[in-house]
Each structure stands twice: as structure tokens, then as C-alpha cells.
Length: 410
Image 1 (cartoon, rainbow, N blue to C red):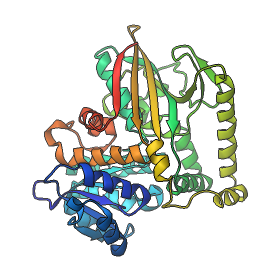
Image 2: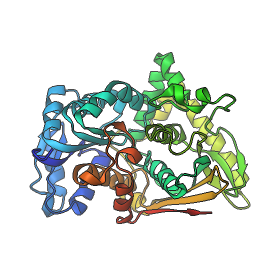
Image 3: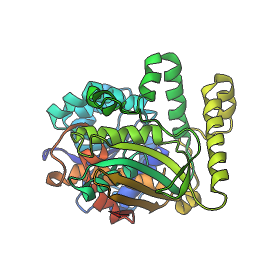
Image 4: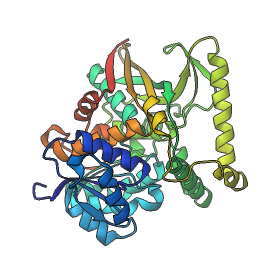
């Protein structure tokens, strides 16, 4: 793709996370990188560009509506890689990802929408593999810490396969935007109108490229994997556990990674994600979070109460304040056992609101890696995951931006 006009096009640049990503690229893209900003409003794009540092003031602008396939195809043909923040992806994402898959353009987004990822994988994996495009979903807090953290444990273990693996969020501070809630509402509406959607979301291997080879079908007696729904104690973590709201998306991404790697994590790899609490009040904290999360999901699932909640939730395009973003942080521990009995532990952590400040860094560095790292990347194309499309080069990039990624024997 050396004949492409741009290295990177940032689509949805004027949205909440789009602006943060544009600011990150303006500050940290290497000299000589060719970057364009794209969206549906020329006026908003011009205003954004004028607010960026001087080195970004000449970045070209591309006007393209999310519902205009011809404009999006033209955009895709002009660039090596696209990063998009335009969601909910179920509603607005398909034309752009199709354009990238068909035109051999690498693609990164922030979706945590399992239904969207499943549909693009079913429809576009072979198309992208043939064109050479790397289509990479979940390049933010969904699901880079999960996917790359487990990848590091796998590399540490070598030929010693991973078995029981738990990701525990031990610290998280940040806010939620209107876009996050909009994605939740669209998914709930899809489930209400399509029984198959509910079955897909309930399937722990919903994103597998070879569902019949997953262990619940290929290994007689395999106990089904389930997301944690209640309170539990874990001896390896020495913590009380509660459900993690992003687990139903992240776990499916990590299991897709294992399948795309021909189950190199292990044929008996079991994976879950949780919130973890320690200390005297840990059982009460875990119980309180579990009850609150169950109540929120229940209210969001009912149309009358959902309309009431809408009145107090932020609108799309809104998000946490700059102070909240700067004061945010997250810390994740991933513990795993191997077939030989080794105990491994990975730490993934960063400063900055995980869903916004940190996510803008993750998305920005993902698309830069897709565009610029060339021969360092794994030799595969299709609808992939962060670990299978980029992997260790992205770990190294994020480390240079203050992220912690470690893995060691426990």
C-alpha cells in the first residue's frame, strides 16, 4: 500500500473520543506520518483542526457520511489504515468496515459490541483475508488490556499451555460517555427484536472462527464457561470477586484470539474476567457492586424504565470532564495456571480515564502500528483481534506511552 495518499485517516474525529484521539495523534505521531481527519461535517472538522497543535493544522479533511458507501469506499482507497470512533457500530459501522475489507485497508475501532463483531467476522473475514486488510475490533479498554495481557502470559509459558486464567480489575477510576450507553441501548433493542441475537450474546465462544472445534463441543465432559454473575472468593488472587461489566465482550475477544492462533493458548484454556476487592470490607464491596450492576442491567432492559434512565444519562458526544480523564487510572491483574502446574501473573495498568484518555492512546497507537509497522506485524489478514493483528509491537508502543505490561511467574 505504498501508493496510498495517507498513512492514517481518523474517522469520527469530531466525536468525544475522536477529539481525544486526534489530540494524541497530533502530539505523538512520528514526523512524516501522513494523517487526515474525517467525518460528516466540514465545519466541525475545521474547528477541530484549528484547535490542534501547529503540526496538525495542515492535515487534510475528508467529508464522508457513515451511510454513504461510495464516499467511504473512496476514503478507504486513499489510506493505509483507518481508525473509527463512530458508534454505535451496529447502527453506523458496517459500511466503513466493508469498504476497508474490500479495498485492502487496515481498520481499527473501539467496539465492544459482540453482535457487530460476529457479523463482520461472518461476512468479511474471507474478504479481508483476500485483500490483505487487517480488520481489528476492540482497540480500546475493550479489549486491549485483556487480549495483550493474556498474549504475554502465553509467550511467557511457551509450549506449556495455559489452563484456568482469570483477569481481575483491581482498580479503575473514570467516567462513562453517552456513546457507551447508546451502544448498550442498541444491543438491548437488537436482542428484544431478534431471538438469535440473545443466543449469540449468551455463547461464550460467540466470536470463534471454528465454533465446532471449541472445547464445549470437541471435549466430552467440558463444563461450559460462564461469566461470573454473583460474588465469589478466589484463592490465587486472595480477593473477593464481582462481575465485570465488560467481561461479556472481552472474554469473547480473547477466546477468538486463541482460536485464530490454532488454540495455541491451550485446548484446555479457560478464561473469565471479574472485578476484585481486597481488605476487610471486600465481601460487602463485591456484593454491593453485584447488586448494583444487576439492578442497572434490569432497568436498562425494560423500555419504561430505560426511558427514565435516559433523562439522566449523558447524550452521545458527551463524556467525563478533563479533570476526571486526567485523574483516572486502571490496574488489572491476570493470573493463570499452566498444564505443568506453573502459576503466572501479568499486570496491565495505565494512568488516565480508561475509557477515554487511555483508550485514545490505545486506538491511536493501534492505527499507527497498522499503518507504519509493516513487517513487524503478524503475517495474517482478515477480521482479527488486537493480539492476532498487531500483538507485541503494540505492547511496545504502549509501554513508551506509560502503560505497564508485565508477565512473570507468580
